[in-house]
Length: 341
Length: 283
Image (cartoon, rainbow over all chains, first blue to last red; front, top):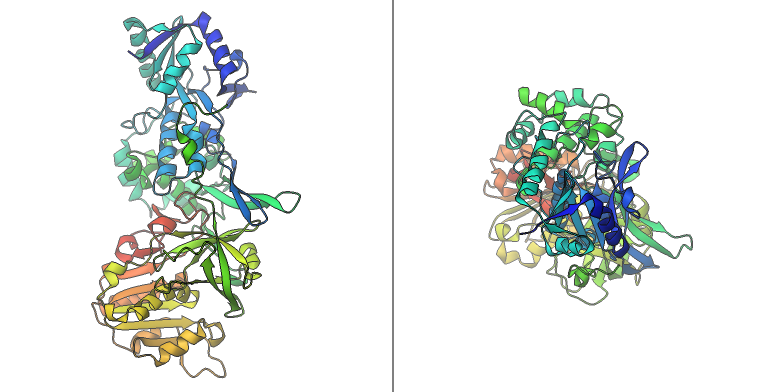
């Protein structure tokens, strides 16, 4: 039996002890919204969050990450991960992390990402409040969240803790956990099930159907219509938990002798993302129109990666919908309309 | 905090972005914009690439650019890279000379399918700088000529001044091992050869229907060459295209080179035409 219970009154002490022993990152309030940040006091942890501004991918794949340090033309590697406990991740973000794990591992394993990932412990938590743009219950229903080490669910009087891996069990020592009762388990599973009915948005079709039909709509005139108001700002890419495109640039330090080769987040909605420089100042942009870039993002989420990932590369967090200035990034109305054709 | 929970520490040195040093043994301007570098690995390791593969070439502080091998691995001591000056990275690399070190990451990508080309009639259609990556295959065929049947090579440049590998061209014109045809888009005073786009060369020589065709050139060229191949009835499974896209990582992660669901850097840069002709973003 791997399921435990901890009382509300003991939970603060558990968090305190864990924070004392480890670097813990979890959801924290930032003005009216939430962010994943280091938790330094138990009361900072806000397991009642709806969604964070940025997904937790930033821990493993930071917005700016050094790849190689150089001194003149001599190089040194800079893979030095810091063991972190990522505490309080909703199931849709767990699914997304599992996808980026697979994508960074396949073909050419990228240890700049994987080392950060392997050194972390991921503890999921149930969704207590649902984001106003979320649609996680109707996307990739067949894809089980996996790759996390434990999962905590709020029930009356305390929390049920499912310690999945050895890393997850390691945390038991910090708190007064008891074996969960049958009734407590039932209550937890009910909480996790019921939240699925609370999504404000819903895809009308199954992911596999969507994958095929959307792919066949490549030449649809609707892409132009959908993207008419796009500012090509890339916000939808940056807040997406499954977007992982990046740019690589060299930067000198002020001494002009040392520097870093580093990667920064990039996005396929940005105008120059696919532009090749040619001689004489000429350029060739392989996705020149807003419609082609907009379509690429939707296709990446619905269709292109389905065979590889076994489901869509979208988890229904709703962050893109909330981040888009023109409010055109939400995949739900777009996919639902394409499916009606 | 030390990492107590996993056994990842032995993996930290496997940094896929770490380049390797290569020493420049010869460097000369090939045209006004292209510099021809002949290199060898600084640690004297042998050549271990396939024709059609590429490297990310760099200098620290400037960045990386993808460059195809321009020589065949059958030439074991050194290898060639041709760098066209375009921007910051290529500009910095152009300043390098004999004895200097260049940083390379690779070999990367999927090259020409030699097992499918061996024993066949071959046609290489190279436009402009497209002759550089295909030269890795051309040299390979010339070095192992007995392994291939008829070998046709079409090369088109914008003008005689922009022709690359002048020594090679002189040899190919005379050689019995290759049926070489060339053209330029714009003629000049001392040009005596063909004038016109590369597709005009299809009238110069018969190409049999069972030929395996390799195409590499500027994006616009593919469409027109493919029309000619259709006229000849060459099946699309027997046509290979070597594609260029913006690339950053070269290892199938960063997303820049995607054509629909394919990554040019890892699924290509050489693709069997039949496998990508349905991809809307390929041509």
